[in-house]
Image (cartoon, rainbow, N blue to C red; front, side, top):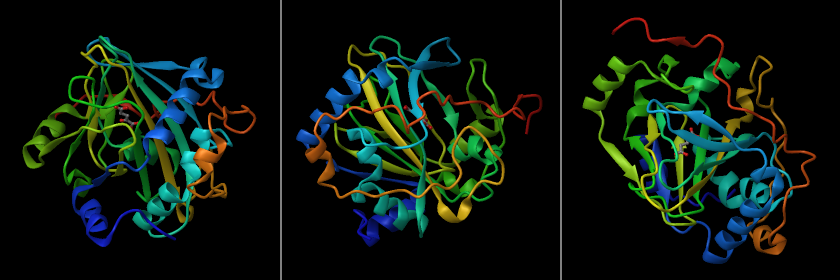
Length: 280
Ligand SMILES: O=C(O)CCC(=O)C(=O)O
């Protein structure tokens, strides 16, 4: 098992709730990914939107299983999976992936949330889950890069409420108190950079106010020993077939065959989620 993170970076992840790895995918790999994501009908025909609090729409397409497409291979390659296994201290499986797309000139925000704020309701009993975001396009403050509250995973899982749009967020008064405790960090990424983050790390991203698209490929993993106890829209433990890092260039612009991925997976708000009704 060869994580791309050294001991110092692993410590940083556990302290800050995230760590950034520059140039995890090289120029040629990013070019292959861009072409695949732009031309694959399973991607381009399956976008849906989540509305933010200002009425903007953030676009995404989500799938449960990584197939043999080049972006499926990215979620299965040693560079990524071995690193997740180091972060989660044992075998992981693919929980889902998404292409998060912000169109130029107003592609919508993601409100402040923890991923485990959603996944807790899926019967995943422990926060043994983590994500990686790989920049396909440059992500800047202008086009809506991720923002983290550094160290905020330490607060543990927070109740989430429905937003004015159709997302979930941390109850607003609690959120503003937490913002006083933790530094907000803009996660600006160049194409091919990756950010690994803990499922309880509070994060958001703003609307894309620029004239440049922002595509980000996110893959989410669950520890094999954290198999969900209820059936829901994401998979139970499914053995993840790892591939060598070289598989990406070897595959080239290989599109999905659509048979294994389950591209119709929609992000859903848990039925238990309520509107905010009480202050702290
Ligand atoms: O794409 C983004 O900016 C944020 C995505 C996100 O927050 C998530 O997938 O949990």
